[in-house]
Image (cartoon, rainbow, N blue to C red; front, side):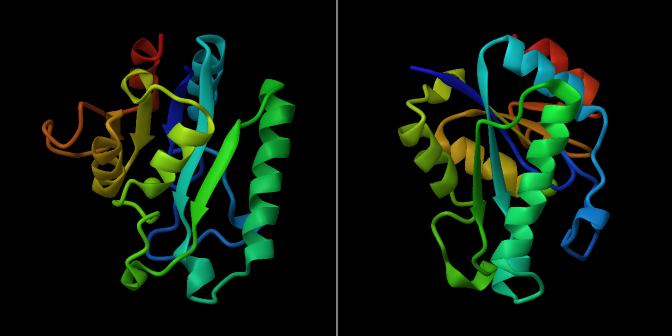
Length: 170
Ligand SMILES: [Mg+2]
């Protein structure tokens, strides 16, 4: 079985737009501190798996093609900067009101990845910046890391900066 570092996107890999959606390559700003985390995880044998809610598509604010173009851009950027990219991308474009079992805090995307990539949940981490990330991770049986100002009980580990993630990824 394999292990994975699951990653939320907005607020972890790229700067999030508060109250809005990253819709274009121009609006996509990489968080530089994620690069050493990806490097360490890759070196330690973790699959790198993106788990992202993107209801901007469901709302009609951007298209499926826009989202795919953003993720191609992320792929090219990581290849350029690190020499490798994410192993898999799971997104959910449903609206919050749709009740989609794939949309975080539901664990559907994680469960899909666990099955498709033959992952051992107990060896995986989910790194996110929202309580819904920790909730989805917990429900999928993976260990959770929450970035930012959260109660210490909100996840297995709460960190203030991405550099705090490095010692966990061994
Ligand atoms: Mg986020």
